[in-house]
Length: 101
Image (tube, rainbow, N blue to C red; front, side, top):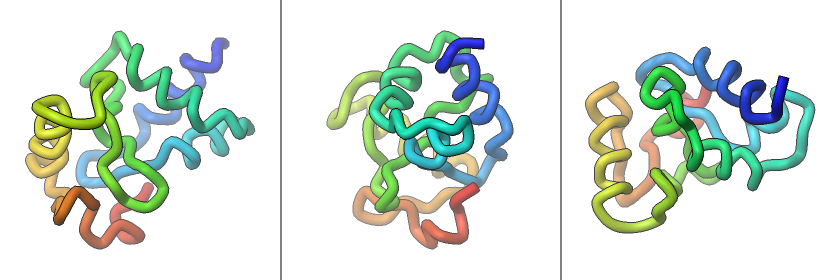
């Protein structure tokens, strides 16, 4: 199984209304390749079945989406999270520690 396949398998388990981090995903497969997780999210061919919009930065900030860090892509990520009940305030997940899966 490839690195990406392992990451996608773990990410499929993150339920609606929860988020995880790039670091957490890497650690769950026994890796420290946090940046490679970002690349796997950017290249995710299985969205939204593999919910890459639920992956945020370790400090709770929304982070990138669809290969972008600003603009309409980030707004789309925020809208997707909000539609799942995740509140975003000033670019960060509200109650981050409670939302983290």
